[in-house]
Image (cartoon, rainbow, N blue to C red; front, side, top):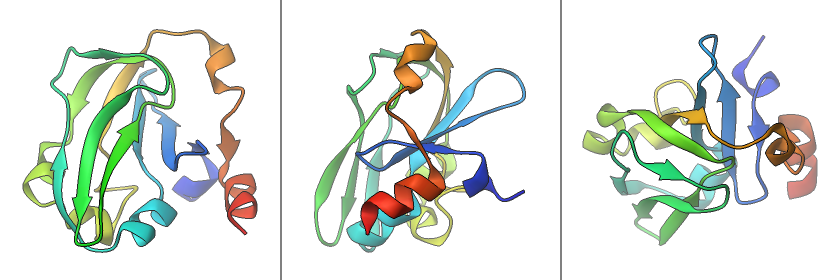
Length: 127
């Protein structure tokens, strides 16, 4: 099963993936990365920081633009992908496996998932 069959996507182009340990991986969809172009800088939050759904948790800069990245569900940061901050171009190469941004512990309720789409519906909405 490919990763795109397991993720949920937001209208603001973030994805979320439930991990085996009950945490969630958050990142940018391949579409968002394509739209940004060559990524040159990424700022991620510190472990332990808590965010509410739709709050800005990171900033990404490309040769085209700077964009805010929004939290798809409420959660506390439990891990940050330091490798991608040191080599932001990793996002352009692989936004899912190597280019994930943070891992969180969910702090909200399951209702927060109601406006997220599976990848197929997300791709359809882009057309």
